Image (cartoon, rainbow, N blue to C red; front, side, top):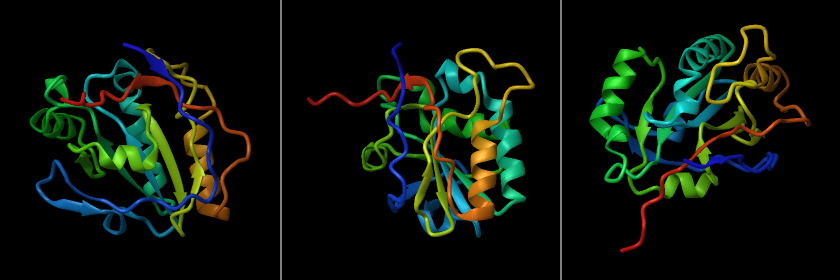
Length: 186
């Protein structure tokens, strides 16, 4: 396992549209996922210890952001042949077990991750109401273990600012996580 940091935020880059199957049995598009004040796109997976460490914080923050008009979508783009823990059936199981209140989508072709420039799990992309990128940073100081309860909530505070002003903070700290498990060419 390699830990990676994604690049810094490329402000105002438009969100890329998608049409992907969700664990709830329906297909989801960018427009269907968007909230009135913005959208948080999270690239996650089931097996990554960096993601597992922050499950409860993701749930807390996304629920609080929903009340501010920021919707959330989670996308898994890992190679499910090489990483069966990230299979669609296991995604469905995890979404049910953790009671996700946002769509959890499978990007089996990995095209969406490539269009977004996602490199790791977790990788967070925060968009304003115009679906312009305003945040590309970490959830908080958590790594493979959950950080202390009183740490700054980087993602939540940034998305709250985006909901209020349409603009993200200029200073952002990159997320850290496992590399996306890309399919190898045959």
